[in-house]
Length: 308
Image 1 (tube, helix red, strand yellow):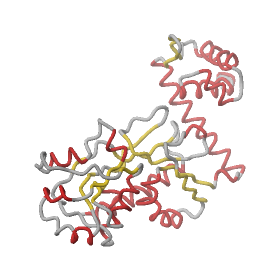
Image 2 (cartoon, rainbow, N blue to C red):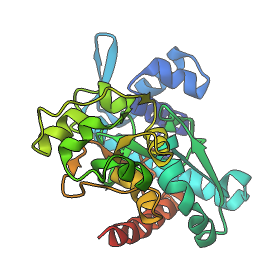
Image 3 (cartoon, rainbow, N blue to C red):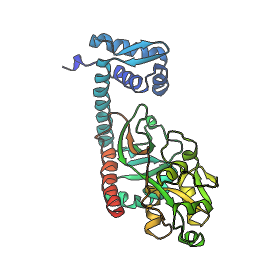
């Protein structure tokens, strides 16, 4: 039966080219020439008797048969790597690296990480703070939590958490501004802005749209300082520097601790983006991905229960 299997090097070349949809990038990843990748894929296609790729102008695309075969090859190669790590006892099998952005790491994931460490003592947990998002194809990162629209090239994603937006400020700032008894009282406040919300036209969540939701379209509003990360706007609000449009996931702990208040909790703007667990194709059942998924599910259940 073994003689019916294609050579391993052809499968490695096919997996890389199918994942990256580029023979040039596959060659760079495998440290071989473009011609070597092309020959390996041609050998594999001749072995199987089907075309795995459609050769288009300046790019390639998987055929239907190629896409199905690529899913199987990715899964089997991931299983082979996993077993190799287990048997050889390599250090890399014990290290679990999670990548995420600075705001989610500092305001939500980081404070909970000690429970992941306690739950899986067999892993050496590494938190990789990466803005912009890391490339999971380098195999240094096992899983990532990304904030986006749920569509990421060359990887698998699972939506794990949604969020809403509502104004937040420190208790002292609310008192200083007369209690903020109406939405229109925000006209006298300094508004704090997150850069990405200000300039991303696709986003449903920004001050202009929040005021529209709250029925106060014509309310004058200050431009105010702009921060590159949501966590920075939140910290400015905690210091009493103004009112931030707080992301529910990022402000929950500060509201619970009394560092922030939400003066208009009845007006919550749904975010178009959300948080996704992201990992390499074929790794859905990898022990490291399963560990991160199961732990996140437990943490999110508790988080949503506490938020009710």
